[in-house]
Length: 547
Image (cartoon, rainbow, N blue to C red; front, side):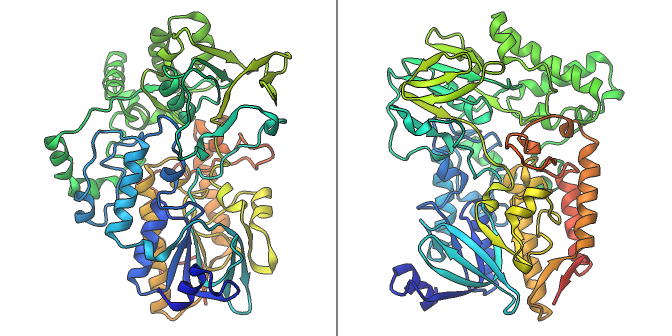
């Protein structure tokens, strides 16, 4: 670490400008790897994170029941066999505490902490056209002068928490799941309300139903759910998945979604009996395989999607039994797979408990928070001691629009994306030279990918690009307007062919009022996206202007 950085961290020279080759925003999966690779090139690089330690998503998401729904042995870095094999998972889908420990293991094994500044929020970044560098500001009053600005803030890191009038008036405790406190929250015997039944809300509900005195779940949009099977791992299980390291490294980056499995079957080639056999088999797997490796036609063909949707509905109805609960909790107005599909463990059964009540807010929405609890439009007040908001995120864009980022001519990224969400391959944005991005729209990492697979690919592409620039004595890179136009058009053509584009969800930003409508994630597949990125690099970064 150079002396200027040490002084700034110690607060000895808060007014002094720190000079870097590269600044990384975030110390999660992407940020840690980006820091490691750029440091290996000999760059003066530093990562900044609002959190007090590493982990990104897995630092913040401490809510009850938080866990993987990607298999642990594929949610890992694949650049180092020693790093991969040096950690052993306890089960197929571990919980947040174990995942956070793994992230700390990575930071320690790679000796990354010395180049990370924690408890620091990047508040603004301005591109200086004269110096061709970024001037970055923090909430500590620091200024950092950096050649490259690399955003690794995550695609689900800007929580939607200020939802209802009167939240500050509540006499009890109110939490957003993405900002759950580190100290334990006493739920025993309490009257608890959960708002939101997406993947996060489902994990919370199934976990706390047996702990609380009374649980009210405010249900608006029901979800298709799949049962999770998470067997514990013994030494033989760990040895078995570690022996697959080379296989996984050679497979994951090239599948459709970055998982170990891929679509193997074609609907038209099978009889109805054979299709049912496939669906039963992948359903029994207890993973996301039904969604990501059964029949790809479900994303394009209404008829196929309806048959698969009804298969899942029947499974859910058989578990719920109660007709009112079926009406509330089984989706009928959109198709399976066009939303994020949650895995669960006895989530549906939780509604059978005498202390759990499902409150429909689809036609009777929550109107406000009052001192006693939540008030719905019909005037009813639901008395509560604790309110848990599992209300999601400003996905893909929120991590950056909450920073005042100014590019060429003072243009604002928040304003640009407020009009039209555009990127070039999810790696750069025209008008913002030397700013590289991960986990932003128009790349698979925005939603449709095993995140470590896609984030590794993006950070490697960025690192290779910077290495290429340095070898050619170039100091500035920016996608051309034509390149960005072409990518946006390709992205939209690909997305518009899917049923995802016809279904309101956070995949389209529909959960944020006024957010421009566009499928956030590239839907052409992880392997296809990788090849397109590799082709750009092989061409000498054609479509990216360098100076």
